[in-house]
Image (tube, rainbow, N blue to C red; front, side, top):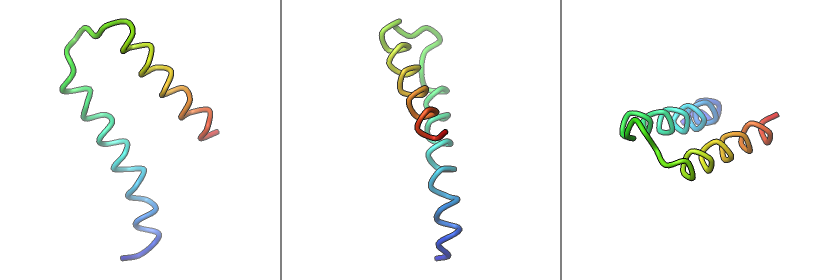
Length: 49
C-alpha cells in the first residue's frame, strides 16, 4: 500500500472514530467526563500546533 495513502488514512480514521462516539453518547454527560474530554481535545490541539 502507498505510504502517502496510509499517512492520510490514519488521521482520517481517528477523526471518524472519534466523531462516531458522539452518536453513541447520551445527550447529557457527567461534568467530570466532559472536562476530561475537553482537556484531552485541547491537549491534542496544542500538540498538533
